[in-house]
Figure 1 (cartoon, rainbow, N blue to C red):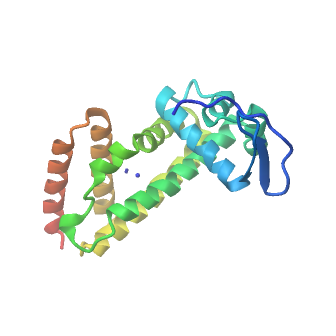
Figure 2: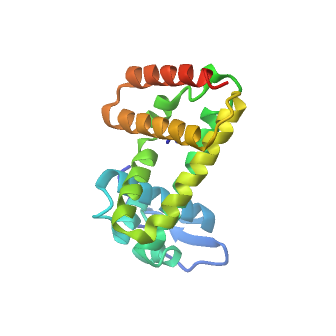
Figure 3: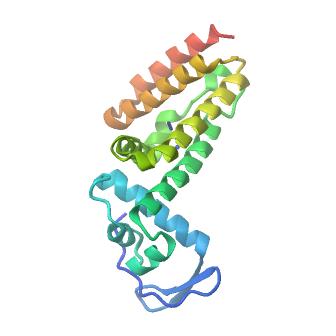
Length: 211
């Protein structure tokens, strides 16, 4: 469900403990924590996959998108698959945060309010996940990460339904998640907020009968 142009690669200097020391294009030295650099690389991977698709993705392309050297990227993610699995986990963490905000209510009429705005705000996140899900059909080694994505979002859906007074069984949880996931995909492709929001209103009306 739902939640830039490449900079010129920066020259790399030796790293020290949990700090990466590098220079920007003007030659000034800057220090970034390893976690910050990791998030930068994962964000670049998500943008690159969302824009160009999975099949053309390379670690060099992600390094260019992030504005770092290829050598620096490989020090974090030695292979393309390592990068993809980590990017999917990063996307999952972001999606859980988005879903939590969209379902942080005990009023059924407010459930998922703002879904279309969130997709419009960050379409790359949703696109990346769909790309990885489809790729896992061709590459079984991505399957465990995708199954984790689904199971985690299903758990979040169940908790959201319980907060608004719906006691969901497994079938209802899957039905609601699949409906919202499908609406998110439709909005991503068609961009018709009025149609998507009207469908969400109908979904809430159906759920009101389950309380």
